Length: 168
Image (cartoon, rainbow, N blue to C red; front, top):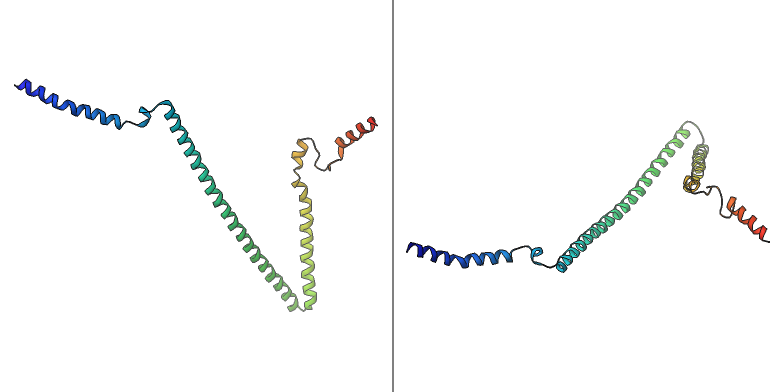
């Protein structure tokens, strides 16, 4: 009887084992039970999601960078106002010093104006000398066009004019 009881217990557990196998098959990852088309669709969805996430991150960073740029410009304007105010206070102090030293106020203001205009003129001259750098002279030389050459002039224009003269 003992053998019959063991066989009966084994038979009673058999449906439980098959039910557990069915449950594990249902719990298997979807990749194991899907076809090739489903796998490509899942891959496409994952790639599209990754690109969308990166684009969203880029847009957020661009918005943040734009707001930061605006904030930097506002700070630059504030700094410029503060520097101009400090400069005016310094110039006022120099004029007051000249007046307290015995100069007429008009002469003191004239001296300060002349010095300011001389410094401004020197800065404008320096700026004009720097303008040539904006034209990318080294790159233009590298690509074969001299930086100082105006459009329609130079060796290329001379060769075109000579060819046109031979044709007539």
